Image (cartoon, rainbow, N blue to C red; front, side, top):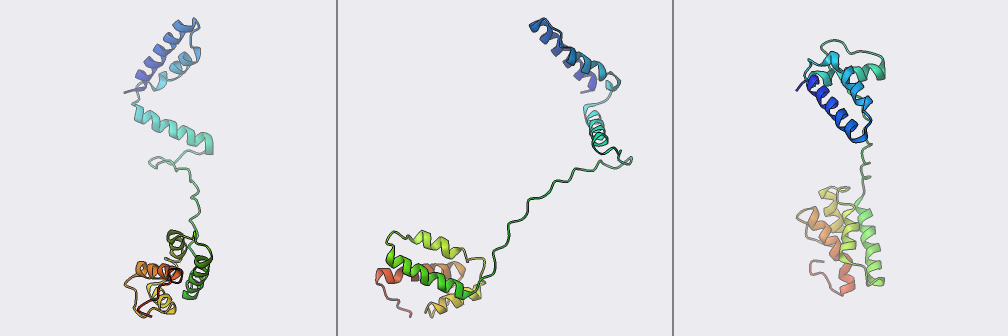
Length: 168
């Protein structure tokens, strides 16, 4: 498709608008006429020309021949800050606080506790999670971080249920 085809469409549209409103669409006819010097160009080449014209209009400079025009730089959104490193003692203190809440708030759910404990999931290493389980009185080493989190959540509700741990 060439610019000449676009000119035909614009003239045809101007005729239709003129017939419907009894006023010729002078702006469309003017645009079609101004495209005449470019009638032989393919659309892709004409689009490239329009990019160069826009760059010249905005920056006042033309790119060097053979080089693609510079893309406008878009500022990246700042990355979310990494969570601060934590210590096993932080999780142990959280579990103790949650234990107290579990005894005084019967509406505290396992899911809510799990969300709070999982907030530390990426902030501690696997070895630190093992240390958390050990600090909570569990002799058996958790298989992975997920297991350590389940152990900590279970520990919160063990006192409320009146259950005693068999591995303590």
